[in-house]
Amino acid sequence: MTTLSTGVVEALRAALPADRLLLDDDVVASYVHDEAEWAPHGRPVAVVRPRTSAEVQAVVRACVAHRAPVVTRGAGTGLSGGANAVDGCVVVSTEAMREIRAIDPVERYAVVQPGVVNDDLRAACAAQGLWYPPDPASAPWSTIGGNVATNAGGLCCVKYGVTRDYVLELEVVTGTGELVRLGRRTAKGVVGYDLAGLMVGSEGTLGIVTEVTVRLRPARPAERTVVGYFASVVDAGRAVEAVGAAGIVPSALELVDRHCLAAVDAWKNMGLSVDADVVLLGRSDAPGPAGDAEADGMLRCFTDAGATWAAASTDPAEAEALFSARRLAYPAVERLGPVLTEDVCVPKAAVPEMLGRVEAAARRNDVLIANIAHAGDGNLHPLIITPPGDDAARERAQVAFAEIMRDAVALGGTVTGEHGVGLLKRSGLALEQSPAVVAMQRAVKAALDPLGILNPGKVLPDE
Image 1 (cartoon, one colour):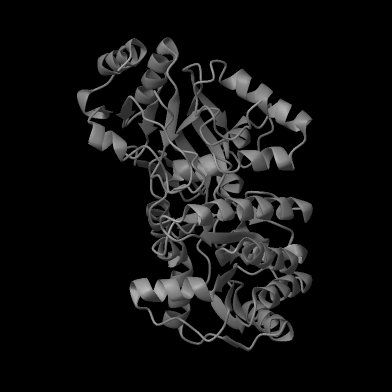
Image 2 (cartoon, helix red, strand yellow):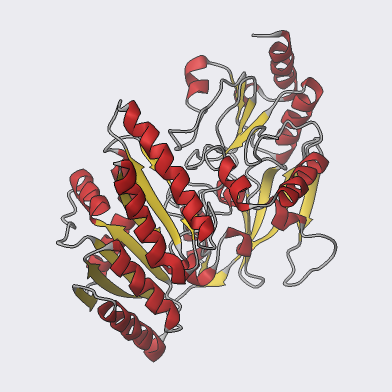
């Protein structure tokens, strides 16, 4: 350990209760990376598990004094390497900050610490007849702080929006060690710049979130489910385009291909594999006759787009099993070999073309690409799977990864819809944004983190 490392560790010992600081090599090793197994990571000098905002502030101030990098992580479920350690850093894990401090049923907001698990917040809200909509597939494990860091989306965001749409107020420790409140809890508020919105999706590069106030909605009616089988991802994409053209806003519209369903079956023995290349799962939560009309409309769109079979589900358990398979698809595919995960988002009208280009990239580079997608809002997740230990396949996968990003931008889309830039998409940021816009982002980073200690090397491309 260097003199610099020893200094910051001793400062942390002096500033924190002893049980907050983790130094054992084997324990520290479990905190060095997220779920993006293709992203590089370094070796931290320590891991800290604070429980209060004041403790987070003490950590940052110690790191400021010793110019030590700070990398914040929640549950480590990210898929871009955004929470990966860098050499010599202090990892701040918010996993012990799990207090739900308030749920206000009148003003319809909740106040939580960043380590609260998404599904735990949703369950607590449901007990009071309320609902927190953002629902990433990792909701049973991912934390609100991590969701804020990446501006996470999820299955129902096609209708209800993403994390940024629900964040009212944040408590944040800045790169200079200041503890500040950003945003407001009132229904309206236009004082100054929207610094709370700026923090959402900043991936720990502008500050460390220590408390979050989120907007809530009333509990919603039971959903109707429509299922369609298709012979190709392009046909399924045409159905997605048709749903949008018909003016239907489903509460979910998800795509799962046969590779993913087969992987889920092999893992969980759910018996869901079907004689189709692609399954589309649509839902409507509109009440009464409006919901019936939406479900009927989706069914027509599926059929007109060439579905080999389509029906409105009359079995709630069957419908829930299909959506469970969608949520399990990524961890199931991971069991097949190293996975390089895409996260592009394109306009709905471009979904068929983009899915076709994904297939072309797979053929051109001789790699297996499985597909899952929040298809209703154009957010596609091609999963590039390589055989374990096959270095040549990894090189071809990385070429396909870059091609898919370029194709998304060419079709008017973005290189990341909800996973974040992290490490894997830094080149994509430069591909998508002009040098002038990148310079603006560097200026914001320099203003809020003048020493450059917050999650260095992430998001922004090298100069």
